[in-house]
Image (cartoon, rainbow, N blue to C red; front, top):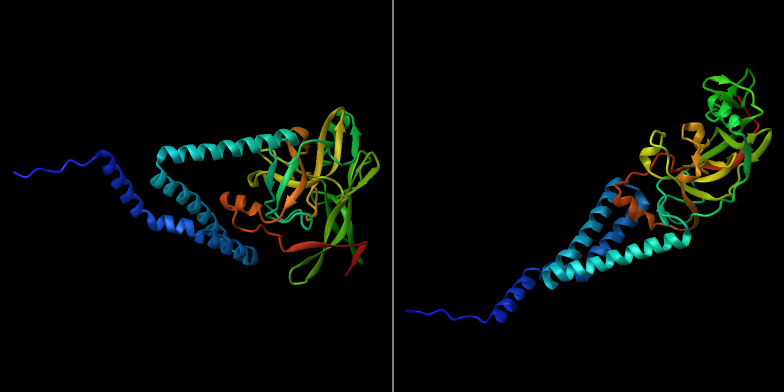
Length: 326
């Protein structure tokens, strides 16, 4: 008869661990070499140049692979419980930092990323913003509840600026649908014709809103006012895009209830003119007090927002025209 040698349990465990490390030495080598991080940086740089959605998707996939590889190799080399403990510590630290920053800045969203190009040139797509939840540097207009009801019921908020044609020239005017209307003394918009340009240097003119008039007092748009992040109502036109980052141009105080009229610096019209609801203060997550370029792209990639929105290559020149000659 032959007898099998009884192996020491500790030695058997060491051999098993060694075999596991041998099986995953290549993955560990890839992780330790940081080649995936270098590849991620290269893909992100290419995305910033070409704006190709495929490159954004590749960047998102690389981020997932890097995180997954870190966890997988950690489990195989250090054990499941050890990796769970390290992951739990990292998550707890992240939550402490997030909620701690939120407490200090008085907001439940201390960080957010710019998704669109509607705030160019002040904020570009991919900026990561630090938000603060107190105070707004915006002028206030005062209305009674009855005046506010009349304004909303009369559709005064959704009137738009347009180019109105005459036999000799075209000029800016206020319209309600397809009808040219006079300025209402209770609430109206100031209209102008603004120049826009694109990356190829082409220049054209469009109708634009340059201010808000409340009880015959004009509040002209200013780039010195605070940029806010707010959550649109579910039925608003841009609700599917998530939080909106626009400048708070005017705050309407309705007997203590405050509503923000916001506008993107790179947009022709106010948000309410294109169908968004007036922003009550409960939906304002905070104002931007600091922004870092490019960091926000990591959030955009992981959220699946790979394509650059329309209009990113266009900007206002800062020039306005009284009329457009034919």
